[in-house]
Length: 105
Figure 1 (tube, rainbow, N blue to C red):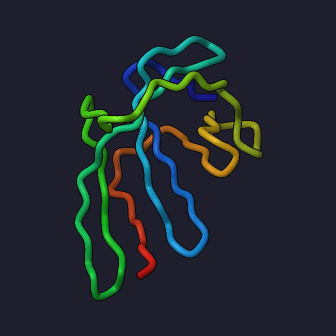
Figure 2 (cartoon, rainbow, N blue to C red):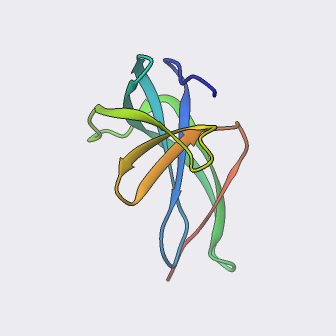
């Protein structure tokens, strides 16, 4: 299992009729918990297809975001670390690739 370390960027993809992408940076980490904070992101949007690409902006936090302490869990396979931000949003270590998002209306 990968260990989540301080400074790591996590990515979350969630939504019902659209795919939202959020990024979080690990502020502090122990073997069982992390403190994370939401990052700003750079987005390119294609209005014709209602899709776009996004990447996080390291160390540039969303102004009103607060630090959140969360337990480190594992994915359903029991292999990769996962953080549950809320009951509908989980995040994993970002692989450095552009992330595709969609919008509705």
